Image 1 (cartoon, helix red, strand yellow):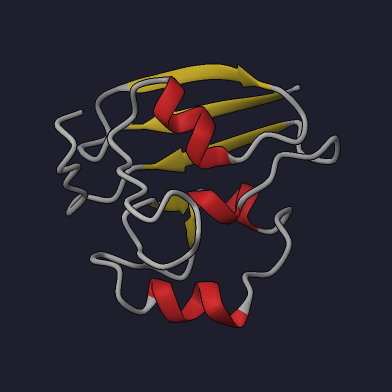
Image 2 (cartoon, rainbow, N blue to C red; image 1 turned 60 degrees about the vertical axis):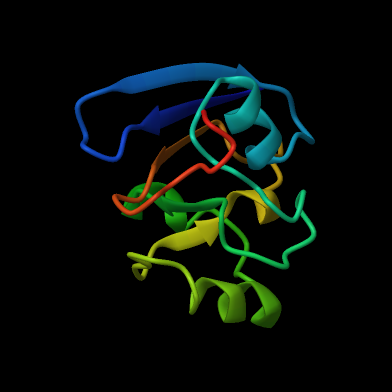
Length: 111
């Protein structure tokens, strides 16, 4: 299990969830009601699941692929610690992970 902490775009709200090993962060976020659209359903064809990983946790993740980096170039408010939630698989090596919803995040699915 990985303890995932989601921080709202304004930084005022935190939500902690326990996520099973092997889960992808986008699925966990959507199940928890986080405003990540995931328009392409995890096919890495959009950037609507963009999250900002805390610097402490960013280092424990595998490097982003070139394709993911290309999609992040299109994401609003991308930072050095930005990732696509659909590309983060939770492993036994990740005990905890904290991510913030970007300030320009807009979920057109109404969440």
